[in-house]
Image (cartoon, rainbow, N blue to C red; front, top):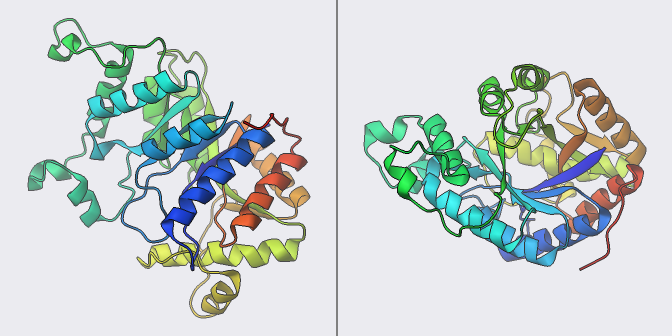
Length: 341
C-alpha cells in the first residue's frame, strides 16, 4: 500500500502562519525520509486556520527540501486562474524538478463566495457566476500537451519553458461530476473523502468502469484522500482528535480561527452538536486510534475500493503529534524509507 499526504498547512492557536509553513516544510522532509509517495499542498484563501493560499510557491520550496517524494497541488482551484498561466507555472516546476511534480486541479473555490469573487479578474455579474470549469480544464490540458487543433489561434502559442514531459495532472473532487470528468478525460482521480464521505464508493466505481484511456494514462488511477490520526494509545489519539472535530464544526459555522488545543476543543465541544454525528457515509471520514487500529481501518477502505494508494490529511494542534502520527503510520504500513537530503 502506498501512502501520501495532503497538507493544508494548519495554523495552531498561539502560533503564526509563518510557523505553519515552517511546519509544512519540516513534515515534507520527514515524509520524504519515511517513504511517502506524494506530498500535496492544498489551496485555501482568507482563513486564519490554514496558511496555504498559494500552493505553487510552497511546492517549489518543498521540492527543493526533499529528494524523491512527488510534490504537487491538492489542488490548484482552476476557476480562479488562466489555464495558460497555470500551465506555465507547473511547466516551470516540472523543469526544475523533472518527474516529481503533480498538478492536482480542483473546481471548488477554496474560500467563501466573497473571496471567490475577489479572486476573479472578470467580475461581470453574469460571467463570474457561469461555471466554465470544463472548458478551462480542456484548455489547460491542450496547453500542457501542445494539443490545440492547427486552426485554433492558441496553437501558435509556445508554452514556456519548453521541456520534455509534463507534470502529472490529477483531477480532484468529491462528487459524481468529477468522477465522470476524470474518466472521460483519462486523468488520474483523487476523491476527497475527508470533505464529503457520502459518494466515495459510487464515484470510484464510476470512474473505474467508465475510464477512457487518453493522454499518457492507459488504466484508471484512483486515490482516496481521508483523515487519519495515530497515537501510541487510543485515548491519546481521541484527545488530539478533539481539535479536528472542533475545526469541522467551526468550518460549518463560518468560524476560521486557528486550530484549538485539545483541552479547549473538548470544552467547546461540550456545547453544541457533534460535528461528525451527521456523517452517514459507508466509510468513516477519519481513522483514529493506535497504529494497528488505524491501519486496519485504512486497509478495510482500500480493500473495499480496490485502491493501491491512500492520501492522508492530519490536522491537530500539536505539530510534534502530527509528525508522530505520520511516523507511526509509516512504521505500521512498512514504508521503505529514503536517505535524508
